[in-house]
Amino acid sequence: MAAIQFYFHVHQPFRLRKYDALQVSYDHNYFHDQEYLNLNKKVVNKIANKCYLPMNNVLLNLLNRFPNFAFSFSITGILIEQLEWYAPQVLESFVRLANTGRVEFISETFYHSLAGIYSQDEFAQQVEAQNQKLFKIFGAKPKVFRNTELIYSNDIAQKVADLGFDAILAEGVDRYLDWRSPNYLYQAKNLPKLKVFLKNYKLSDDIAFRFSQKSWSEWPLTASKFQHWINMAGINADMINLFMDFETFGEHQWEDTGIFAFFEKLVEYVTSDGKHFFTTPSKSLQLFDSKDTYDVPELTSWADTERDLTAWRGNAIQWSSLENLYEIENKVKAKKDPQLLHDWRLLQTSDHFYYMCTKWWNDGDVHAYFSPMDSPFDGYNRFNNALADLIWRLDQ
Image (cartoon, rainbow, N blue to C red; front, side, top):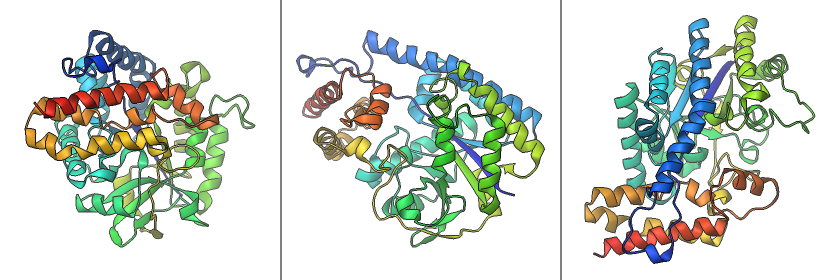
Protein backbone atom coordinates (compact mmCIF):
# COMPACT_ATOMS: atom_id res chain seq x y z
CA MET A 1 0.00 0.00 0.00
CA ALA A 2 1.46 3.33 -1.11
CA ALA A 3 0.64 6.90 -0.13
CA ILE A 4 -0.64 9.08 -2.97
CA GLN A 5 0.27 12.71 -2.51
CA PHE A 6 -1.38 15.29 -4.73
CA TYR A 7 0.36 18.64 -4.48
CA PHE A 8 -0.99 21.66 -6.38
CA HIS A 9 0.95 24.84 -6.99
CA VAL A 10 -1.24 27.95 -7.32
CA HIS A 11 0.35 31.08 -8.80
CA GLN A 12 -0.25 34.08 -11.04
CA PRO A 13 2.27 36.91 -11.49
CA PHE A 14 1.75 40.62 -11.75
CA ARG A 15 2.46 41.09 -15.44
CA LEU A 16 4.75 43.90 -16.55
CA ARG A 17 2.91 46.54 -18.55
CA LYS A 18 4.22 48.04 -21.80
CA TYR A 19 6.86 50.29 -20.32
CA ASP A 20 9.35 52.00 -22.63
CA ALA A 21 12.52 54.01 -22.11
CA LEU A 22 10.72 57.34 -22.44
CA GLN A 23 8.78 56.60 -19.25
CA VAL A 24 11.91 56.14 -17.13
CA SER A 25 12.28 58.77 -14.38
CA TYR A 26 8.70 60.02 -14.38
CA ASP A 27 6.31 57.02 -14.50
CA HIS A 28 6.94 54.54 -11.69
CA ASN A 29 3.99 52.21 -12.24
CA TYR A 30 5.43 49.10 -13.88
CA PHE A 31 2.43 46.86 -13.26
CA HIS A 32 -0.54 49.07 -12.55
CA ASP A 33 -1.45 51.42 -15.36
CA GLN A 34 -5.12 51.23 -16.27
CA GLU A 35 -4.62 48.73 -19.09
CA TYR A 36 -2.47 46.31 -17.12
CA LEU A 37 -4.34 46.68 -13.86
CA ASN A 38 -7.36 45.54 -15.80
CA LEU A 39 -5.33 42.82 -17.53
CA ASN A 40 -4.15 41.28 -14.26
CA LYS A 41 -7.70 41.45 -12.90
CA LYS A 42 -9.08 39.95 -16.11
CA VAL A 43 -6.58 37.07 -16.10
CA VAL A 44 -7.18 36.23 -12.43
CA ASN A 45 -10.94 36.23 -12.88
CA LYS A 46 -10.72 34.16 -16.07
CA ILE A 47 -8.62 31.50 -14.33
CA ALA A 48 -10.86 31.72 -11.26
CA ASN A 49 -13.89 30.85 -13.36
CA LYS A 50 -12.15 28.16 -15.40
CA CYS A 51 -10.06 26.56 -12.66
CA TYR A 52 -10.06 27.85 -9.08
CA LEU A 53 -13.78 27.94 -8.37
CA PRO A 54 -14.84 24.73 -10.15
CA MET A 55 -11.82 22.71 -8.99
CA ASN A 56 -12.15 23.93 -5.41
CA ASN A 57 -15.78 22.83 -5.54
CA VAL A 58 -14.69 19.40 -6.81
CA LEU A 59 -12.11 19.13 -4.03
CA LEU A 60 -14.55 20.18 -1.31
CA ASN A 61 -17.10 17.62 -2.49
CA LEU A 62 -14.43 14.92 -2.48
CA LEU A 63 -13.31 15.89 1.03
CA ASN A 64 -16.93 15.65 2.19
CA ARG A 65 -17.51 12.31 0.45
CA PHE A 66 -14.26 10.61 1.43
CA PRO A 67 -13.04 11.21 5.00
CA ASN A 68 -9.57 9.89 4.16
CA PHE A 69 -8.98 12.10 1.13
CA ALA A 70 -6.24 14.74 1.58
CA PHE A 71 -3.86 16.83 -0.52
CA SER A 72 -1.54 19.85 -0.30
CA PHE A 73 -1.35 23.35 -1.76
CA SER A 74 1.18 26.10 -2.08
CA ILE A 75 -0.24 29.50 -3.02
CA THR A 76 2.13 32.37 -3.72
CA GLY A 77 1.74 35.51 -1.67
CA ILE A 78 1.37 37.66 -4.77
CA LEU A 79 -1.56 35.54 -5.94
CA ILE A 80 -3.20 35.78 -2.52
CA GLU A 81 -2.87 39.57 -2.81
CA GLN A 82 -4.55 39.52 -6.22
CA LEU A 83 -7.36 37.32 -4.92
CA GLU A 84 -7.90 39.72 -2.02
CA TRP A 85 -8.23 42.60 -4.49
CA TYR A 86 -9.92 41.04 -7.50
CA ALA A 87 -11.65 37.83 -6.45
CA PRO A 88 -12.31 37.52 -2.68
CA GLN A 89 -14.88 34.79 -3.32
CA VAL A 90 -12.07 32.62 -4.68
CA LEU A 91 -9.95 33.18 -1.59
CA GLU A 92 -12.97 32.21 0.50
CA SER A 93 -13.20 28.92 -1.44
CA PHE A 94 -9.59 28.14 -0.50
CA VAL A 95 -10.36 29.00 3.13
CA ARG A 96 -13.28 26.52 3.09
CA LEU A 97 -10.89 23.81 1.96
CA ALA A 98 -8.43 24.77 4.70
CA ASN A 99 -11.17 24.54 7.31
CA THR A 100 -11.63 20.82 6.63
CA GLY A 101 -8.29 20.19 8.32
CA ARG A 102 -7.18 17.83 5.54
CA VAL A 103 -5.36 20.31 3.31
CA GLU A 104 -1.71 21.00 4.02
CA PHE A 105 -0.33 24.40 3.04
CA ILE A 106 3.29 24.32 1.96
CA SER A 107 5.58 27.33 2.17
CA GLU A 108 7.57 29.03 -0.59
CA THR A 109 8.83 32.51 -1.51
CA PHE A 110 6.15 35.21 -1.31
CA TYR A 111 7.09 36.70 -4.67
CA HIS A 112 7.75 33.40 -6.50
CA SER A 113 11.34 34.51 -6.88
CA LEU A 114 14.82 33.12 -7.49
CA ALA A 115 16.07 34.67 -4.24
CA GLY A 116 17.23 31.27 -2.99
CA ILE A 117 19.99 31.40 -5.61
CA TYR A 118 21.05 35.01 -5.18
CA SER A 119 20.50 36.12 -1.57
CA GLN A 120 20.05 34.15 1.62
CA ASP A 121 18.75 37.22 3.47
CA GLU A 122 16.17 38.08 0.82
CA PHE A 123 15.19 34.42 0.56
CA ALA A 124 14.61 34.20 4.32
CA GLN A 125 12.59 37.44 4.37
CA GLN A 126 10.32 36.33 1.55
CA VAL A 127 9.74 32.94 3.17
CA GLU A 128 8.88 34.62 6.47
CA ALA A 129 6.45 36.95 4.68
CA GLN A 130 4.84 33.94 3.02
CA ASN A 131 4.52 32.06 6.31
CA GLN A 132 2.88 35.06 7.95
CA LYS A 133 0.42 35.37 5.06
CA LEU A 134 -0.48 31.68 5.19
CA PHE A 135 -1.08 31.88 8.94
CA LYS A 136 -3.19 35.04 8.62
CA ILE A 137 -5.41 33.67 5.83
CA PHE A 138 -5.52 29.93 6.53
CA GLY A 139 -4.19 29.50 10.07
CA ALA A 140 -1.38 27.39 8.60
CA LYS A 141 2.10 26.93 10.08
CA PRO A 142 4.06 25.26 7.27
CA LYS A 143 6.83 22.81 8.07
CA VAL A 144 7.35 21.68 4.48
CA PHE A 145 8.87 23.90 1.79
CA ARG A 146 8.56 24.16 -1.96
CA ASN A 147 11.10 26.38 -3.68
CA THR A 148 10.10 28.34 -6.78
CA GLU A 149 9.67 25.95 -9.74
CA LEU A 150 10.94 23.11 -7.53
CA ILE A 151 14.46 24.58 -7.82
CA TYR A 152 16.70 22.37 -5.72
CA SER A 153 20.32 21.59 -4.97
CA ASN A 154 22.38 20.63 -1.94
CA ASP A 155 22.97 24.35 -1.29
CA ILE A 156 19.25 25.14 -1.49
CA ALA A 157 18.57 22.27 0.91
CA GLN A 158 20.98 23.80 3.43
CA LYS A 159 19.24 27.19 3.21
CA VAL A 160 15.85 25.56 3.73
CA ALA A 161 17.13 23.55 6.70
CA ASP A 162 18.53 26.75 8.22
CA LEU A 163 14.98 28.18 8.12
CA GLY A 164 13.72 25.29 10.25
CA PHE A 165 11.71 23.26 7.75
CA ASP A 166 11.33 19.50 8.12
CA ALA A 167 11.11 18.67 4.42
CA ILE A 168 11.31 20.06 0.90
CA LEU A 169 9.67 19.12 -2.40
CA ALA A 170 11.88 18.55 -5.43
CA GLU A 171 11.89 17.09 -8.92
CA GLY A 172 12.89 13.44 -9.25
CA VAL A 173 15.70 14.10 -11.75
CA ASP A 174 16.86 10.91 -13.45
CA ARG A 175 20.54 11.88 -13.66
CA TYR A 176 20.68 12.18 -9.85
CA LEU A 177 18.32 9.37 -8.98
CA ASP A 178 20.26 7.04 -11.28
CA TRP A 179 18.71 3.59 -10.75
CA ARG A 180 16.59 4.66 -7.79
CA SER A 181 12.87 5.39 -7.74
CA PRO A 182 11.23 8.75 -6.90
CA ASN A 183 8.58 6.79 -5.03
CA TYR A 184 10.35 6.87 -1.68
CA LEU A 185 11.27 9.45 0.92
CA TYR A 186 14.86 10.69 0.76
CA GLN A 187 17.07 12.92 2.88
CA ALA A 188 19.20 15.87 1.79
CA LYS A 189 22.96 15.46 1.59
CA ASN A 190 24.61 16.03 4.99
CA LEU A 191 21.19 16.97 6.41
CA PRO A 192 19.60 13.80 7.78
CA LYS A 193 16.78 15.79 9.43
CA LEU A 194 15.69 17.46 6.18
CA LYS A 195 13.59 15.03 4.14
CA VAL A 196 13.04 15.28 0.39
CA PHE A 197 9.83 14.43 -1.47
CA LEU A 198 10.46 13.75 -5.15
CA LYS A 199 7.96 14.36 -7.90
CA ASN A 200 7.10 11.35 -10.06
CA TYR A 201 7.30 13.39 -13.25
CA LYS A 202 6.09 10.61 -15.55
CA LEU A 203 2.73 10.14 -13.82
CA SER A 204 2.39 13.83 -12.91
CA ASP A 205 2.96 14.98 -16.48
CA ASP A 206 0.55 12.39 -17.85
CA ILE A 207 -2.14 14.49 -16.18
CA ALA A 208 -0.61 17.96 -16.39
CA PHE A 209 0.61 17.92 -20.00
CA ARG A 210 -0.54 14.86 -21.90
CA PHE A 211 -4.13 14.45 -20.71
CA SER A 212 -5.76 16.08 -23.76
CA GLN A 213 -2.98 15.34 -26.29
CA LYS A 214 -4.71 13.31 -28.97
CA SER A 215 -1.39 12.36 -30.59
CA TRP A 216 -0.34 10.61 -27.36
CA SER A 217 -0.43 6.85 -27.69
CA GLU A 218 -2.28 6.54 -24.36
CA TRP A 219 -5.00 9.06 -25.23
CA PRO A 220 -7.69 9.12 -23.95
CA LEU A 221 -6.51 8.87 -20.37
CA THR A 222 -9.26 7.42 -18.21
CA ALA A 223 -9.41 7.22 -14.44
CA SER A 224 -9.37 3.42 -14.53
CA LYS A 225 -6.27 3.41 -16.75
CA PHE A 226 -4.44 5.85 -14.50
CA GLN A 227 -5.48 3.89 -11.42
CA HIS A 228 -3.91 0.82 -13.02
CA TRP A 229 -0.67 2.73 -13.56
CA ILE A 230 -0.71 3.82 -9.92
CA ASN A 231 -1.26 0.23 -8.84
CA MET A 232 1.71 -0.91 -10.92
CA ALA A 233 3.94 1.90 -9.61
CA GLY A 234 2.81 1.19 -6.06
CA ILE A 235 4.00 -2.42 -6.03
CA ASN A 236 7.47 -1.29 -4.97
CA ALA A 237 6.87 2.14 -3.47
CA ASP A 238 6.17 3.97 -0.25
CA MET A 239 4.60 6.99 -1.97
CA ILE A 240 3.63 8.34 -5.36
CA ASN A 241 4.09 12.10 -5.52
CA LEU A 242 1.86 13.76 -8.10
CA PHE A 243 2.94 17.40 -8.24
CA MET A 244 1.45 19.84 -10.77
CA ASP A 245 0.22 23.36 -11.38
CA PHE A 246 -3.29 23.81 -10.05
CA GLU A 247 -4.19 25.52 -13.33
CA THR A 248 -3.92 22.07 -14.94
CA PHE A 249 -7.59 21.71 -14.06
CA GLY A 250 -9.76 23.82 -16.33
CA GLU A 251 -7.10 26.24 -17.61
CA HIS A 252 -4.32 24.13 -19.18
CA GLN A 253 -6.69 21.19 -19.62
CA TRP A 254 -10.09 22.65 -20.41
CA GLU A 255 -13.29 21.43 -18.82
CA ASP A 256 -14.46 19.86 -22.09
CA THR A 257 -11.47 17.48 -22.02
CA GLY A 258 -13.14 15.77 -19.04
CA ILE A 259 -10.35 16.70 -16.60
CA PHE A 260 -12.69 17.42 -13.66
CA ALA A 261 -14.64 14.17 -14.09
CA PHE A 262 -11.35 12.29 -14.48
CA PHE A 263 -10.05 13.58 -11.15
CA GLU A 264 -13.27 12.82 -9.30
CA LYS A 265 -13.40 9.28 -10.67
CA LEU A 266 -9.73 8.71 -9.88
CA VAL A 267 -10.21 9.63 -6.22
CA GLU A 268 -13.33 7.48 -6.09
CA TYR A 269 -11.62 4.46 -7.67
CA VAL A 270 -8.48 4.68 -5.53
CA THR A 271 -10.51 5.09 -2.34
CA SER A 272 -12.89 2.21 -3.08
CA ASP A 273 -10.07 -0.09 -4.25
CA GLY A 274 -8.27 0.24 -0.92
CA LYS A 275 -4.81 -0.56 -2.28
CA HIS A 276 -3.49 2.94 -1.65
CA PHE A 277 -4.36 5.99 0.43
CA PHE A 278 -4.19 9.76 0.07
CA THR A 279 -2.11 11.82 2.43
CA THR A 280 0.05 14.93 2.78
CA PRO A 281 3.80 15.44 3.22
CA SER A 282 3.69 16.16 6.95
CA LYS A 283 1.70 12.99 7.57
CA SER A 284 4.13 11.00 5.42
CA LEU A 285 7.02 12.19 7.58
CA GLN A 286 5.36 10.31 10.43
CA LEU A 287 4.79 7.19 8.35
CA PHE A 288 7.98 6.67 6.39
CA ASP A 289 11.73 6.65 6.90
CA SER A 290 14.10 7.99 4.27
CA LYS A 291 15.58 5.31 2.01
CA ASP A 292 18.70 7.11 0.84
CA THR A 293 20.38 10.46 0.29
CA TYR A 294 19.38 12.66 -2.65
CA ASP A 295 22.69 14.28 -3.64
CA VAL A 296 22.23 17.13 -6.11
CA PRO A 297 25.37 19.29 -6.53
CA GLU A 298 23.89 21.56 -9.24
CA LEU A 299 20.65 23.49 -9.50
CA THR A 300 17.68 21.52 -10.86
CA SER A 301 14.01 22.34 -11.42
CA TRP A 302 10.81 20.84 -12.80
CA ALA A 303 10.93 22.90 -16.01
CA ASP A 304 11.61 21.79 -19.59
CA THR A 305 13.34 18.64 -20.74
CA GLU A 306 16.67 19.57 -19.11
CA ARG A 307 15.18 19.92 -15.61
CA ASP A 308 17.67 22.73 -14.98
CA LEU A 309 17.52 26.54 -14.78
CA THR A 310 17.83 27.34 -18.48
CA ALA A 311 14.16 28.34 -18.52
CA TRP A 312 15.17 31.45 -16.47
CA ARG A 313 18.97 31.74 -16.89
CA GLY A 314 19.59 30.13 -20.27
CA ASN A 315 20.63 33.18 -22.26
CA ALA A 316 22.54 36.44 -21.83
CA ILE A 317 19.49 38.70 -21.49
CA GLN A 318 18.06 36.58 -18.69
CA TRP A 319 21.40 36.27 -16.90
CA SER A 320 22.23 39.99 -17.01
CA SER A 321 18.70 40.97 -15.93
CA LEU A 322 18.91 38.78 -12.85
CA GLU A 323 22.44 39.91 -11.95
CA ASN A 324 21.51 43.59 -12.27
CA LEU A 325 18.34 43.11 -10.23
CA TYR A 326 19.99 41.44 -7.23
CA GLU A 327 23.07 43.67 -7.38
CA ILE A 328 21.04 46.58 -5.97
CA GLU A 329 19.55 44.69 -3.01
CA ASN A 330 21.51 46.53 -0.31
CA LYS A 331 20.73 49.95 -1.80
CA VAL A 332 17.02 49.14 -2.03
CA LYS A 333 16.81 47.99 1.56
CA ALA A 334 18.89 50.90 2.85
CA LYS A 335 16.36 53.30 1.34
CA LYS A 336 13.64 52.02 3.74
CA ASP A 337 10.91 52.87 1.24
CA PRO A 338 8.14 50.23 1.41
CA GLN A 339 6.84 50.93 -2.10
CA LEU A 340 10.31 50.82 -3.62
CA LEU A 341 11.02 47.54 -1.82
CA HIS A 342 7.72 46.05 -2.96
CA ASP A 343 8.36 47.06 -6.59
CA TRP A 344 11.87 45.59 -6.48
CA ARG A 345 10.46 42.34 -5.13
CA LEU A 346 7.70 42.24 -7.75
CA LEU A 347 10.47 42.45 -10.36
CA GLN A 348 11.97 39.30 -8.81
CA THR A 349 9.01 37.12 -9.84
CA SER A 350 10.48 34.31 -11.94
CA ASP A 351 7.85 34.63 -14.68
CA HIS A 352 9.51 37.82 -16.00
CA PHE A 353 12.68 35.84 -16.81
CA TYR A 354 10.72 32.88 -18.13
CA TYR A 355 9.19 35.23 -20.71
CA MET A 356 12.73 36.13 -21.90
CA CYS A 357 13.53 32.53 -22.79
CA THR A 358 14.67 32.01 -26.40
CA LYS A 359 14.42 28.22 -26.62
CA TRP A 360 12.99 26.55 -29.71
CA TRP A 361 10.96 23.44 -30.43
CA ASN A 362 8.69 21.93 -27.76
CA ASP A 363 10.10 23.83 -24.77
CA GLY A 364 9.96 27.08 -26.73
CA ASP A 365 6.32 26.46 -27.58
CA VAL A 366 5.51 26.03 -23.89
CA HIS A 367 7.26 29.31 -23.00
CA ALA A 368 5.41 31.15 -25.77
CA TYR A 369 2.08 29.72 -24.62
CA PHE A 370 2.50 31.15 -21.12
CA SER A 371 3.97 34.51 -22.13
CA PRO A 372 1.91 37.73 -22.48
CA MET A 373 4.90 39.41 -24.19
CA ASP A 374 5.21 40.03 -27.91
CA SER A 375 8.60 38.28 -27.87
CA PRO A 376 11.41 37.41 -25.42
CA PHE A 377 13.06 40.72 -26.31
CA ASP A 378 9.85 42.60 -25.56
CA GLY A 379 9.92 40.98 -22.13
CA TYR A 380 13.56 41.99 -21.73
CA ASN A 381 12.90 45.60 -22.72
CA ARG A 382 9.90 46.01 -20.41
CA PHE A 383 11.81 44.52 -17.50
CA ASN A 384 15.00 46.51 -17.95
CA ASN A 385 13.19 49.79 -18.54
CA ALA A 386 11.34 49.22 -15.27
CA LEU A 387 14.61 48.30 -13.55
CA ALA A 388 16.26 51.45 -14.94
CA ASP A 389 13.49 53.54 -13.43
CA LEU A 390 13.78 51.76 -10.11
CA ILE A 391 17.53 52.50 -10.08
CA TRP A 392 16.76 56.13 -10.91
CA ARG A 393 14.43 56.24 -7.90
CA LEU A 394 17.25 54.86 -5.73
CA ASP A 395 19.48 57.78 -6.67
CA GLN A 396 16.95 60.48 -5.83
